[in-house]
Image (cartoon, rainbow over all chains, first blue to last red; front, side):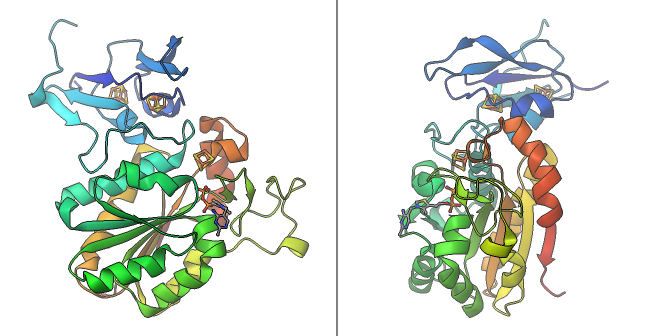
Length: 72
Length: 254
Ligand SMILES: Cc1ncc(C[n+]2csc(CCOP(=O)(O)OP(=O)(O)O)c2C)c(N)n1
Ligand code: SF4
Ligand code: SF4
Ligand code: SF4
């Protein structure tokens, strides 16, 4: 079974570009309805299926996402 | 989910230290940010943050010096390779790179680019090809595709009157002064990782003093192309990559 992961989204840096959405194998991300201080609707987690693959963080142009994955 | 995974031991990916914490001024989804981060990661993986000097261009990435936490110098439009030449000759033990758009590198800076590469300056040239002048409002660049609309080719680039798109990277690869020439992209996780490997290799080669390393990154300009970021990445795959195919163009002889 795949390891479990989790992400932290730095919402003030997010520009809601959606590039991370397409890169996630488990549809963990979506664009929420709230806006940040810059006026962008930012990315949010919508399920707990993250496997910590870091795809979202790697493609994010704005270095918004930090990724964690269980060790064993 | 019961257990908390967000602990230092479980950390697998965070912004690298050679990239500052400033919020990037780029448009949403713009490839410049990812390209910056990969170059910063390559620098950090080699542990050369204190030994690296970058030269910023004129174009959207004119403020690159805000985002790289390494010594940076600004150059006049197109002149980054000439400025980098001077820096590298004074500090031959430093790692020196330029970061330039296609208007900067392939239009106003064509002479500086070609002659620095022809002299085989031991620098890394990072070339962001988004087929347009992003900063000034989406005018046609030398790299604009045939038929591609821009604010100065509103009916599409007509090669009869406007010339053909310039494959400057292939031209550069012909010059004996270049050591490693490659074309990459940063729109999917796999491409991003490959770009980092190419940038890292290029910086490692700088130690050998064998000539110029040139890394083109085909990138999107959602604002200039008037598309959403996700649409622009798809358009790039369908239209830019056939004309600007990804992969190594010149690799060092074994
Ligand atoms: C000497 C000079 N000529 C013209 C300009 C106007 N100018 C600023 S940016 C730019 C084009 C930049 O395009 P590109 O290099 O493709 O970078 P991008 O903005 O797409 O990243 C031009 C023509 C200038 N700043 N200086
Ligand atoms: S790729 Fe980055 S900036 Fe874009 S929506 Fe995702 S987290 Fe936000
Ligand atoms: S780390 Fe992987 S699985 Fe988790 S949200 Fe990002 S892309 Fe999806
Ligand atoms: S204009 Fe184009 S190249 Fe410039 S920041 Fe916006 S999307 Fe990026």
